[in-house]
Length: 367
Ligand code: ATP
View 1 (cartoon, rainbow, N blue to C red):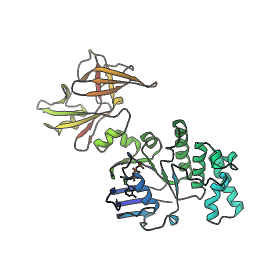
View 2 (cartoon, rainbow, N blue to C red; view 1 turned 60 degrees about the horizontal axis):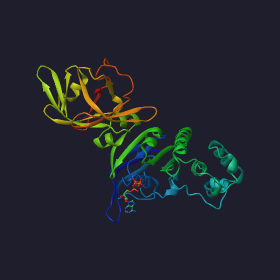
View 3 (cartoon, protein in one colour; view 1 turned 30 degrees about the vertical axis):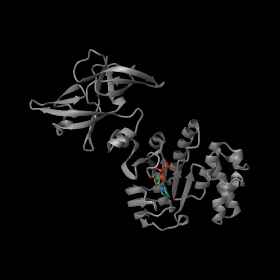
View 4 (cartoon, protein in one colour; view 1 turned 90 degrees about the horizontal axis):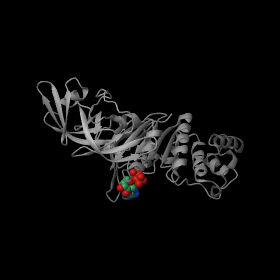
């Protein structure tokens, strides 16, 4: 069993760079946690502190509930996999995978058995005699994984392990890696800047920006209920529509939401009204995902935003329409899909997030 807890962890490098700024994060036993964020946000520094390759400037790194700030890497029961694979070029695949066991003094016979088991689990049983230079990128990455798991570590740390591979192989290996770590039940902390990787592999995602943790949650939570505007704009493709709006609550119990030059009149019993009512007289930011907007016919009346198509983007499985709705541009999913004027409003619900933002669903009439 391995758990990780970071408590108020700060890392300032000698040149004054604040790479990590007061991070609190817990990784549960057997959990697959992904650290996600743009280049330079401090993900690798967090991973290196968990590994013992960097010491926090302040705060605590706890492993299995024990203070571990100064614990050397070799005493941490961890295995690391990096993007450059770092295999020994002069050794065969077999010897590369067996190396950590040899260091640990495991006898040749059980060593051979463990290597055989791991290699067959990873589908590289037939290349054990080859050198790394005679392997494809994907095979090399599997060898690196094999070398990491053969010691049965308590914790996997992976830093962009797929970033040197082409997209087809990445997709294949990300399913393999998350499948394998779950099968083994090993706690994993995985660093990536690729949100598709994060959302497909993670049990929970921790999103960082400029050394600060922005949000932590399951992929569904961070996508559907982002904690900050940054996370709302960062996750998802196309990015979430974010529109400034003003709220006006009428005493005869309806709410006007003004978005650019358009206004939505929401009846009091509409859950969106309830959610925005306490912002009476204020400007808020409304977040609407493309897939939460239902296209309707131009002559639809009621609470409908109106827009003109600026351009369409076809992606095979879906089409996106980029609309001008007056002051702002928005993107709507599946414009060629069902046009249904009777779809009730507010089906998906909405909530308050941050001080500023509401998640919204609605209808858009394409003119
Ligand atoms: P990437 O995805 O590009 O690897 P990252 O999110 O992993 O980025 P880090 O490598 O953790 O980011 O770096 C965070 C910040 O700390 C960056 O501004 C980086 O330049 C800085 N940094 C990293 N290592 C050092 C160091 N040894 N000395 C000074 N600054 C450093």
